[in-house]
Image (cartoon, rainbow, N blue to C red):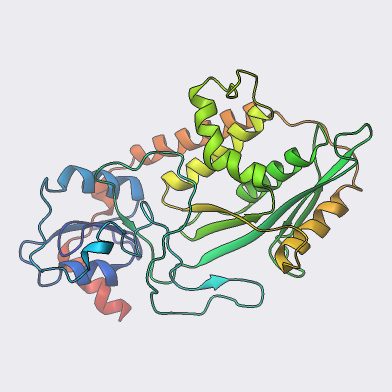
Length: 329
């Protein structure tokens, strides 16, 4: 039988159910549990499909819970579909992620939620070493709103970090557009994963548009409350699409507001990069609607390729799983 070193462990009957990326964690939920039902997959879509089709209508949990009733609605800290967590510490330039850290208690955060959480959501557990990636974005515009305005964008990870970006704002030169495009550039350049991605911005307009207003605009045909057209519609829709893609894959994305020009090192760094971007050559407007279509087409192609894979090729027997555990140990 084909054997893979890593994969996704779907647990449909055990002390906890879900799709886990760590066999150590999955084993703790099935070992010694009467009638435990679980399988290992190499690909996440196959694990999700098997999990959903085999999940009992009434989950069984023979062990009484000791969680107080006041916190029964808070998802466990390893659940990233329903309640993002900061398990494993925070990655900052001065504080790189340690090799291993204990799990802290889950603290509810304000999180962008483009899609409604289902009544019985699929629980996908993050690896035990999951960290929180924090990045600062900013937009700057000289003579904003006036003739001859120039705008730039900045993305700051840390001092001399190769991921830092300083670019000229394409197209129309306004501060709000520069702020939105800076967030878009974060989502375009950061590899998709499981770490909670926190984007800190001093733009209340961007935060409110992407966390609330855009969903009402979509329902209203992209009309404002007074019936007028929404400014930056294509750009906002594109950024929201990038966020939704990550969340559907199990990666939480949060937008945190920070006060600008307040001595915050990250915000000051992003601002300096954005101001420098104002001095770069003028750039043409981007086709935001076209970029959204291309992104969705790429996601659909990836889904089709994964659907063509036979899940049986990646399933390990219980004996194979135990042998792999012994080899890893």
